[in-house]
Length: 147
Image 1 (cartoon, rainbow, N blue to C red):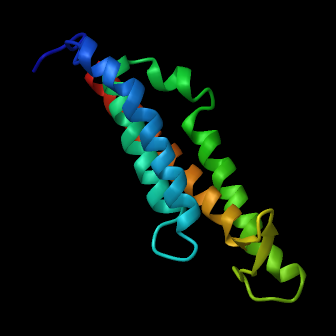
Image 2 (cartoon, rainbow, N blue to C red; image 1 turned 90 degrees about the vertical axis):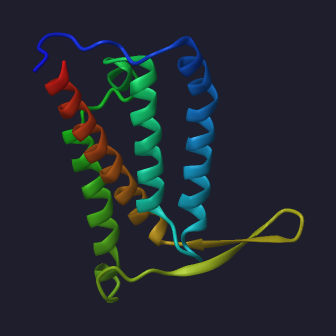
């Protein structure tokens, strides 16, 4: 059993490639987050993609990378996500609808295009935040054990 600091797994090629991989991963996660209301996807899968991107980013940049990138600790971040999801799920009760009921509609945009909106978007945002917070918490805890 090796004790003490572990050898760094970073290289200049890895760090340089993360400058492209992280933004592309976040854009793809945003696409799946918004696309998931009409097809499979949404907040959970977007949260998983962001989590994997953050894990790889942490491997490339070192032990303090996630702390710098996400200034909120995982516990409070998960609480924020759960609060958003719970409040969104309970709002329909205020207007006499069932718990977790979603409304949809179309918003006319310039150029004769329409945007399909759904009130489930804030709920999915809460789910995504919880998935990211839990994943970052696990990554931090596991790397603390190694270091």
